[in-house]
Image (cartoon, rainbow, N blue to C red; front, side, top):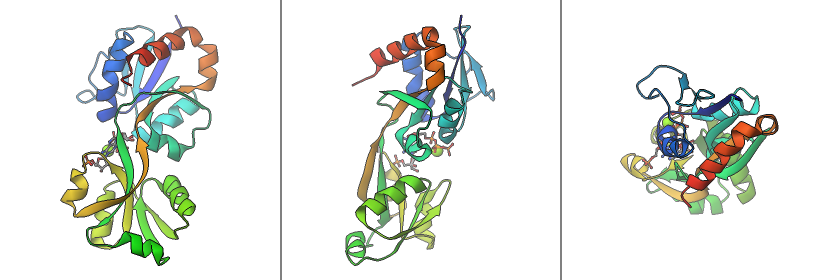
Length: 214
Ligand code: PRT
Ligand code: MG
């Protein structure tokens, strides 16, 4: 039987993907939250899961180290999607990519007056495109996490980050002022693997597709 490798991150993506995997008849034999293993066997001898950083999933699939992967649209947008087939929106790990500023900062008038804004974000490519389309001048400051802190300590005027409940913004006295895009996670497939291992991959795609909540 053809072997297939599926790349995904632990945390919310793994939690939301487990039911879809189950619908495809795939169950991990270890829990990635408690196990330190990075390669997880499953109940299916020919299917294994690899646990990688969320932002590394497209890279593993692009180079064929994984045949399939699950990644947020935020991550895919930054990666660019080269070498990846993206057949299915899984409708999981939903959130919105937003511009947020300190409560009281008048973003709209700063934009209207043509101010040059310092934006802290992990999503430099997506943010650059967004502000270029709007014709807003920005200096982008790349961060790897805790973006919410940047405006509080004078590193930036605004942030571009993901928002789901809004609790993190509220707790840090920030407000969302603009939506950049709606985010959910997608199934991604290595283009060569799809051709060479279609017998093993197609049934997984079909089962995921049938299990996705519309
Ligand atoms: O944690 P690590 O640095 O390894 O990577 P990561 O943070 O990218 O991974 P992870 O597992 O946290 O997120 C994986 C994917 O989940 C992301 O790529 C998104 O597609 C999706 N997702 C959905 C989210 C959120 N919702 C989300 N709320 N990713 C992150 N958040 C963070 C957000 O950045 C902010 O800090 O949660 C905070 C806001 O949450 P609320 O509920 O307070 O608004
Ligand atoms: Mg995280």
